[in-house]
Length: 376
Ligand SMILES: *[C@@H]1O[C@H](CO)[C@@H](O)[C@H](O)[C@H]1NC(C)=O
Image (cartoon, rainbow, N blue to C red; front, top):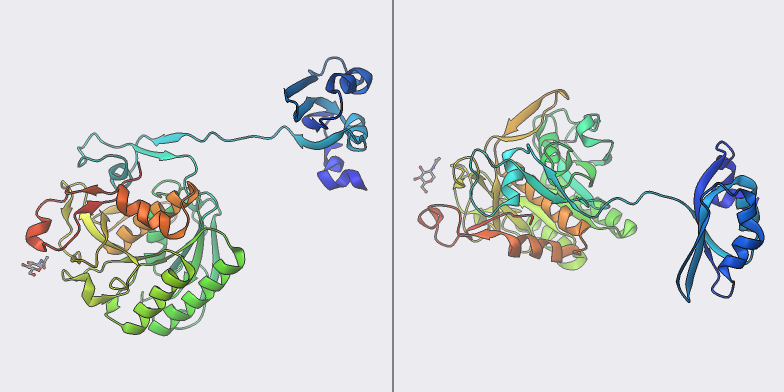
């Protein structure tokens, strides 16, 4: 019975598996090997490690019956199969879409600049709650990392994404091809129906649902709201509560009205990370539709951005501050997977951004922060 606790039963299928066993510091590791386990099979590359007076171990391709006796040996204090570690390194996506390549360099993109360079953590272990029209979880570029958690849209609940907006935003957050955080967990919180319309009550009920989940799981979590409405005190207060009381980042679209983002919600909510749109293929000039002003924290690509379409075989191009907010959300998840907690990840996004790169922003609105997202 004890053997099943660490999976010995399944090992019966294979003749020998490489194991490492930590040996008690009061035992003499060479004695253990010499007396017993070495004799089991001389050709199995069995060896001893003595790292310090408090850590010693034996390793080797031990057969089942050896593993069994090791398990009952009081001098063996821990055992593990030889498992795989992945490198903590920077990965280069050599032919990345422009919205990703723009994150990895300070200067505006030239036609030849196509590399997205990112840390291999890439959002791993971070839960991204996307309030949107749904997510097409079946698309292979999401690699089974999408899970639906709630449906607060007008009309009947439905699986997937009958509209396409949510799938496009999720695509730049975390898809393998177009995503910033290629390993994050994507949670589909449906708030908008097939026409793309969401209701205020649904959004706030979704916030309640999501924050309860995040509090229970106690995992690194963030909330994305790629929607805007005319400035609304209740929506702003709800978003401010999530950020202030729970320290959960909320990333929002700055809005597509060519006006001050302080006139819309939730972009005007205090503490929300509010994103404007630029065209990274045109020297970072502002998108003609983007909102601006002191309620925009930072800009990201938002014109003809490549992402996931509803036909799973096709890529699509989307424009708007929604996709910009998606890119920023992926970046917050990325920094969370590098160890920045909650609002520290948001601050990291702000402080690392490239400043004074966007041309003519001061003419458009002098009080707007001139900052573009960066991941390095
Ligand atoms: C945006 O608004 C400004 C005036 O505030 C106007 O000059 C400009 O033409 C508008 N741009 C678009 C694309 O509507």
